Image (cartoon, rainbow, N blue to C red; front, side):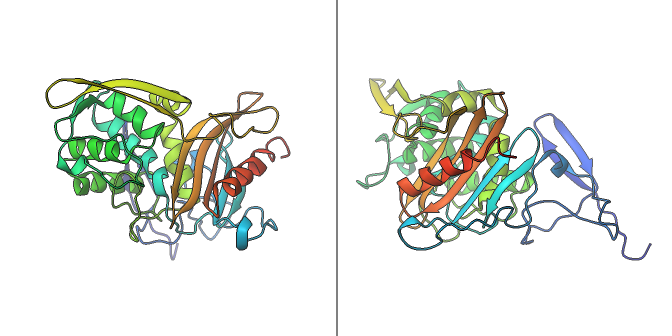
Length: 321
């Protein structure tokens, strides 16, 4: 049949490799691997069959898109039924800020064991007063398990660098691993320059791509357990072996009790992100009273209140479909 072509692409997962008949282009503007033949009812079979697919605004909405109540994009996905319940500007490329650390955790968990000891070098030292950090110095060491807790609960940027330097050999090396993993998961509208999300014009993603990444991350029990913690205390060692104790609270306002989710909806946990350029961002996992899982993502909220308010409005849609 004219126009029909077949391409084989290998998809690698933690359980091995799988072949599927779907070509893709890393430069495509489409985030989902959804390819149709001339017969629109015949959809190409791919790993996307187990993912929600978005092609535009699923619910246009009438929210203010500018001014004090503005946000850049938003998405609500029914994880179990692979259904996009709400999407607005879900494929718009925006800055993720510290939501980046979801992918950092994925790559770290796939490439090192939790008891791996990580040692800080000079590239892990951040002295800027407005940068979230533990205050690592060269020679400080902790396990990957400790680092993941500080990465996801407290959003420590120096700990993100610690993970990258030890697992990827360098920030650049780890970023390459991040981009390879993002491409593998279908997040083709994303590009990552660093493991923490501090601003770079070439570091971006989309709300839909964040769904893809977060959907992969929550398959790991350690990740889910960590993102649900509202505080953490640990002891790591300095270069001389002296113990340093560090305590922190979660950055997620739901976990801190500052924001209450709609009735019958439980927020399991998620990842925040905030910079001037990115605005206020939040991707997270929620669960209804029947135990069904949902992923929400709001990007570029004009402020934190807008982002949490929009998230709650998304959660309020659960049960209405």
